[in-house]
Length: 258
Length: 371
Image (cartoon, rainbow over all chains, first blue to last red; front, top):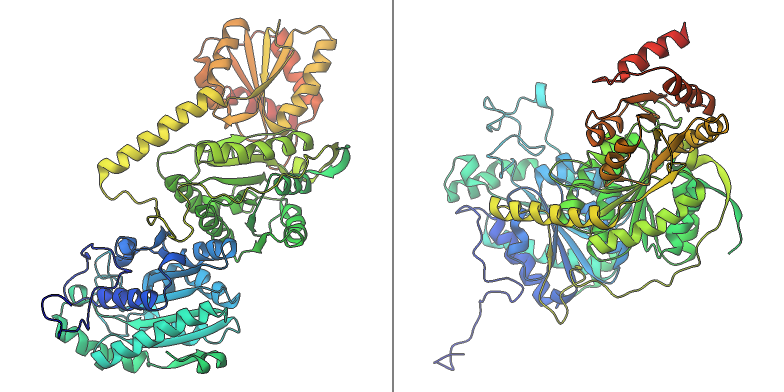
């Protein structure tokens, strides 16, 4: 409350965050996604029972920012590592935080089979349409015609095929309890994203199977845009290809009041 | 416990259970599959974790995750599957968490076949994935020894926070022998102080193989090496047969060592002063003992079920002091005692000059035998 008892704190750093400053580029929405996860862990009082699994990509240092137990997986293997942890400690909350190269390319088998098994873990999936960490190469989510450092003429669908809509694909699996796509390009969508992340962790708490929130995210540095342009680019280019929908929602979740 | 007739793969699985195995993740591959099948029935019966993963890649990473919780964990595979596990093995070593891995070797390269071979010596003893570390590798030669070394593997893994490989070939995995299992051990649910279990009433813990600052990675490499020197000093194991007065020393591990023992006994019966050194830890490798023996004997014969992978380690230990000869069968062919006996006799009665690569004369003899 500080000096003035009339002042109410409406916004503060979640206690589930460490004091560390993130290494993310200006305008990147990783920081927003991190904060939403941290807020949900705090609100659900999960800090002491959560084990995070960081992946390989820009979020490789995620364990520096969340104030909970963490392990660091090999590229793409976070869902397998999370499976190993969850099977031995089924009453803990286990989540992975993965980018699109990690989850939808090198780790596609691991995420598909974790979802198929109904592995009771949560995946936070950052889709920014390129490999950020290595400097902006073509990802499985790179849009047709999108220029990257490894598709300098733009993604050629004749040569490279089409982007993968991961959420839609995983939603076909019976083991999945909650699969949605959200975007981080404006406050309204950020609020919706937070609600989705909350529901994903609620899915896990209730043992309803695999949960994943795909988050459309910016990469201004590698996209060669300023932060505002990159937010617009999500809206204008990514959302038409990657619709923001609920692809699979366990009916029990409709009873959850948050 | 009384002796029972046990199959190697199943005996290892049951020995692991009785050593307190809490979680197993694996993938079917011949000639290892009975191990996975045995655990698929027994682990759920005991309320423990069994999972058939979607690949060896996933299996080793599941084991990696489970190991980070401080649980006793194991996986198993055979040569091509072990190749896929190399990534995880390196991460496990870099994170310094204990894991037991069983490799039931078959012939290669590539798909090769499903017959017994010792083709993974290099990939396991000198390999184990990228980066700077060495796994502990135990090489049993019988079902009983497979049981005993599986029990020991878990102890070593915990003691050194290291990956311990039980290295057998398909014939040990598949054959049945009378053997005695250990009693069931109570699982100690207390987690080690480094385990990741959720930060309740303590500071958070991070387990990772990342050391982004090169100086920290160098420090880690050094720490792992220091621990390795400790392992070398304390955990060297080998078996010696008839070496007291041996002028000729045969060196072989696992099945090759066991077949060689029959040949050594037959040669002894003829009065040939030959003995056998059978490394149990092929990693750490008994360089010092082999060096000592090279001061006492006048020749060595290395017998392997590959094209001479351990041979190079024996040569390094001997340092050119006495001739080191080689005899190998590979591709899934197991040498017969008579073949090794013949090599022993030849070395005993025909003068052999030291050679940089004894495989050249061995290849000539192999060609002659064929024609």
